[in-house]
Image (cartoon, rainbow, N blue to C red; front, side, top):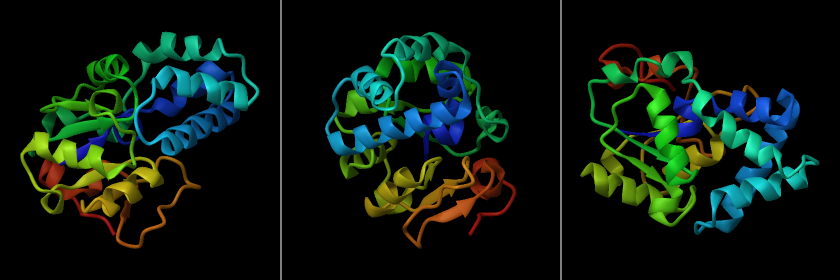
Length: 201
């Protein structure tokens, strides 16, 4: 199993909102940064993408410094706080830099086999090669590796790369485009994580 670190596991939205000054600006900023990563595909420095997105959305470039300063206060979503009790081996995949990925994993309480950052992989999600590299590290084939995303572009990207994909809806307005992505409201609905619950639809 693979999970997206910064939306499926961690409540990064709260961190972006705090750095931006309010929730609406934080979400617009994060969405602009995501668009920049999708357009880049191959990795360029994460902090540079975030800084450009800040300017595009009317924030000062220094907002990026505020975001990074708050990174070590990021918290997991309540339904992800027990990932340390997961009964299946899993890895975490993220579009941020390797250093920020380590900080977020340390805050998560999870015990993944590995965390694969876009910086380390060389590609941003939703490029298929980052999902395939994560499967290689986990020792499984894409068709036999569940991917749980917290963003619709990520769920669609994983499904397009051949992985069975779940989308845990952290933002009510977000919906994946692919019909084969299973939409859930909580990680507890993915029964194989903790050995109970439903698998979602």
